[in-house]
Image (cartoon, rainbow, N blue to C red; front, side):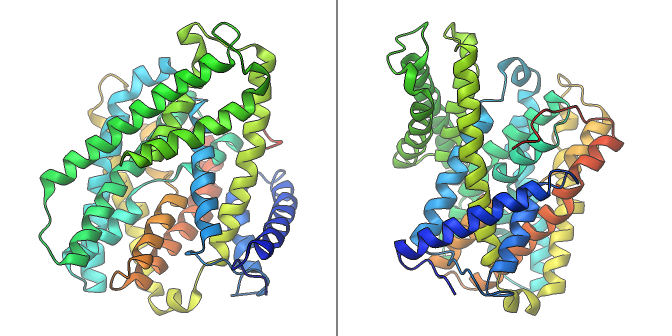
Length: 414
């Protein structure tokens, strides 16, 4: 079995995973199956549970590096597709979804955890908060293959990028409470959320402007010929600086991508050839990262623990998908009179909410910090990832067509 303990072995694993991932991705094109679902299944097959070829510890430095680098690049690339004119129409819905929506979801799932697993309320809310955020690393690639009405697509992509900050604050606050046995303090948690969000947005916006200034011929443009390299460095730098300041690095990377994607709004538009080059480079990097992230996640599924609490775990995933998400949407977007959402759009938002990289990273943090019952947290998180990707991601196209929300795309070569 190949492991990830040494860099030499890690390189061999990466070559095998990316090579097979490309083949699997090609096979999913004609049936229009979201490739992230196929990558996850490939990981399970290659992992210890089936063929025992590849094993990647969730705590290994290589695995953590790939997860955070991949999520950062995917968020940045997804941010480039967001348009200011669309955001102006739906900013109320996004603001409510990433705050009130996440809290509503965490509370509903938390009740289920408390009743089914008989854990304390704080521990129950910790697990629920880990599951509360939707996943941009899953959602953005799915929408590239199954594009929907632009306004709805950008709302959901932006929600998935921003709500990791809310979930992260909830998780870290609750984890500290569980580990120390102290009382939960709501005020500091709310303040931390706004600090992380605003600083992350500010860092991303400033660095996005710097990046545009460096590559746009209508600004300084001195690094125009290296635009794709500048964008990769920009995405990573946004994450690093924001995280160093105690803010959301993922939010910063997404915000930087939004700024670059709206270059024309600042009078620094990019030539068509440069824009196409950035699209190609972004697709290449994010495709590789998606393969690595989701195949590795598949290899990390511990079916021994999963089987132990299988039915309870499935019940919690059902609560997440069929109760928490619908109520989160109904308690937020319906109040947005400016957006004037149609009911078919609201129904679509209720259904599509994949769990993936960010919840997996948060669950890994619980394991690393030796939180009591961390093995159960990891098992339920993987069930949520498996359930939402294999059920919801694979049916996104069908649901979009049934609700007349799908649009044509020329991006089937991703």
